[in-house]
Picture 1 (tube, rainbow over the protein chains, first blue to last red):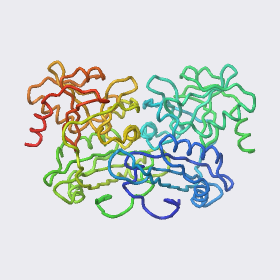
Picture 2 (picture 1 turned 180 degrees about the vertical axis):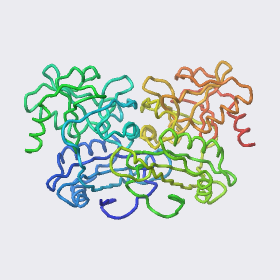
Picture 3 (picture 1 turned 90 degrees about the vertical axis):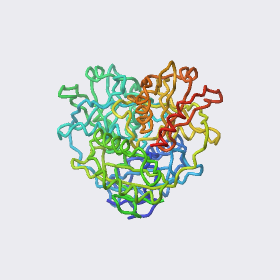
Picture 4 (picture 1 turned 30 degrees about the horizontal axis):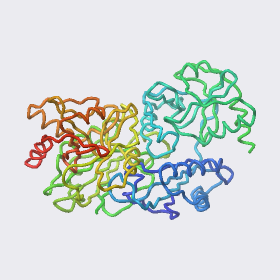
Amino acid sequence: MRVLIDGVPGQGLDPLDRGLQYGDGLFETVAWRGGAPRLAEFHLERLASGCDRLGLPRPGERALLAEMAEAAGAAEATVKVIVTRGSGPRGYRPPSVPSPRRIVAGFGSPALPHGPWHARLCRMRLGRNTALAGLKHLNRLEQVLARAEWDDPGIHEGLMLDDLGRVVCGTQSNLFMAAGGRLVTPRVDECGVAGVMRRAVLAWARACGLDTAEAHVTLEDLRAADEVFVTSALVGARLLASIDGSPLAGGVLHEEFTAWLEAR
Amino acid sequence: MRVLIDGVPGQGLDPLDRGLQYGDGLFETVAWRGGAPRLAEFHLERLASGCDRLGLPRPGERALLAEMAEAAGAAEATVKVIVTRGSGPRGYRPPSVPSPRRIVAGFGSPALPHGPWHARLCRMRLGRNTALAGLKHLNRLEQVLARAEWDDPGIHEGLMLDDLGRVVCGTQSNLFMAAGGRLVTPRVDECGVAGVMRRAVLAWARACGLDTAEAHVTLEDLRAADEVFVTSALVGARLLASIDGSPLAGGVLHEEFTAWLEAR
């Protein structure tokens, strides 16, 4: 595991960094495959768009990609990029001249369980805020506390509802369902993260001529669906086989997408 | 400015600390007055209760107070305490054996503007989540973006509404209004922070025999109130003289509380 801060390895972080103080920043978790970042354009575009929304200068892409390669240190790895608003005086007010900071860390490839995933429903709900929705920002206590709800290694993901009871996502994944001839994913304009693999699935489906929709989704919708699968940058797509022990239907769209992803 | 990490000064923070990675932690901002922490019991109790709610071991109070005194380094200072879930493997899941980390930083006393404060209404809303409400946790992007909305030094605070349009707090303060013979402060059980100075005002008011309430509050309520004031650990209580240029009524409760606070 190797960490670079603004390109320099082996140093500690200024404890006054606003990423720590307020979660004032963004991150990307990138699957490094065959010596290159998978879905690199989507990660870089989301990071740039997130910087715009938070009022942060965008990091330079070439320097960032070089740091990611150095942090990866192998052909197969997981690379996490954090961009914060950097250090500043005490108080919420952002410095008028921001000096953002990059933290790039390389990890081994995760040992992901094969086959379909089993999910549970989390008690922790997602608060809604359109100004932050979709962003992969550093305010992740909801996901942390949701993931703390279970220990059972046979449960691979926890589904999260918003305060209105709509299904939004997993703790670390987005969600798709095939129903009525359409491929539907929950909207992420009030809460949730606009995942890069979610974007890839939507792009793939449209290219295949599938009817797609971003919509409000309920648990009843999932239980009645022809197929449910979860997606993430690291995992790709996995069939969701059950929720709290109740089996779901199983289809082949997730396999077709996976074949396309692996052939790219 | 002096920072101690787990009691040791002058070192950097592990960039894998979960406080940075996810905002997985809590903080307190303490007014150091006459060589001692003001409202120390309230700060320590809120921190302990927050640790319980996040599933973190409570820090030892004696060690923490000693570190705060060392970080303060003067009779008058501002001391910020952060407690995080410490370092751990990548991923939201908290380590089964947590090793929390203390970051204690001393700053000079802020140069606070005297006299009444003028406020504006922020566009940024507060998302609601009962599981996180009241906590002084490290997920503070809403406050950061709200505070980024204005530069005018004549505006001292921004008022924040929840997504239902109810007034909850300022970006860095709680809110009180006197109306109908009662002292009312917005509820903080769906969003907002349960401030230590808010608790002190409520305790003082009850000891004075005032009728108090934690209630839902609207902008119309504030505009019709006999007196509106804001509170924070650093500031104490300040009359709120206007919102977006519209003057508010002015009373004396904030002065009576301030006299009590300063006489303690």
